[in-house]
Image 1 (cartoon, rainbow, N blue to C red):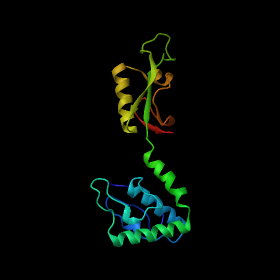
Image 2: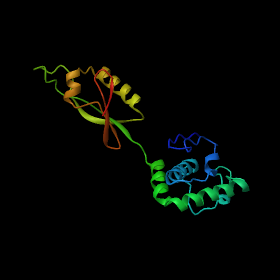
Image 3: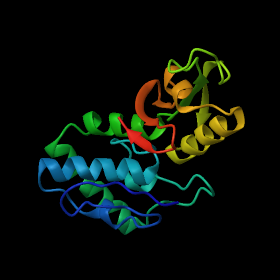
Length: 182
């Protein structure tokens, strides 16, 4: 498992099994905030400020997460962070962010082309389709356009191509497939 958490100072990234940054005592408020964010990221949301280092276990086999020496260093770093900041103010939002489900949807449809009197393009009532990324939204849009023989005017008249993340517009897929970030 690999984590990419970008923060300032020496607390930059904790990747996979690298837990060395969990043992570095923070000296400033900013370092303490970053230490808490990295700790939440490393534990996958299982960090609790009141839990001693020796009590953490791996969920896959019940093995201790830290050696006795590592647990002491973790406890010292945890105590140092708690002296500098209210760790709950940082840990709770960081944990919530880990578990917030990201839902992407693209709006598809076709309306009467305002440039023509007769209706040459099909009229398809707008609907949303779930996608996993902007790149998938781009592919879905182009396939929808090609499969339904939709022209550019009908695409824009239906206000189609908008990509939403948890209900908020984040981008639009242009008729030609270009991703335009909002």
